[in-house]
Length: 222
Image (cartoon, helix red, strand yellow):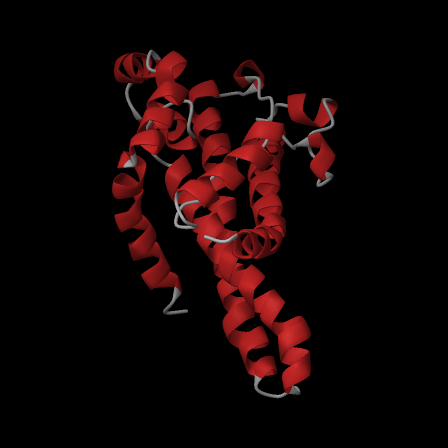
């Protein structure tokens, strides 16, 4: 990939990535707040201000490096995790699972919304306005929405892998009986190491791509 292509794709993907990961984390905190835990609210994390959520490595460097080394085929990132205290919940096991599910569900919603705007607003507009308007304004928005669909789908599917501390691991712990949930919880200290190995070896792509293809085919029917 040449430098001009990389720069263009980074500019196009920057805003969708920020929106996707910030709303992902805010959703965790907002649902936790509604279930009785005000930790995120007290720490100023129920805000859309990106400064409160940006993690230098997870939000900036990791997506950029993944984009370069995978030739734009796989992009993943994260914001600073929103703090949640499960002891503030009435039912810690259940409510932690619900809070965890909020992030991926938000990304799925953003992917659907991007599809709707793209198919029923941007594409029709592109057939009505002059070509210079299409090139200068409509096409960049179209490319951002396309990136939003891909990014939000990847974030949702990747985060739902059943490995704690990923959201899927926390949801699974909430569904399992206490003994099995405790056993799964013992993986958590090694969870990110497992995830990094899956990403570094390329195995993550083979695990999640079938689900991404399935999900994209479903939303394409909207």
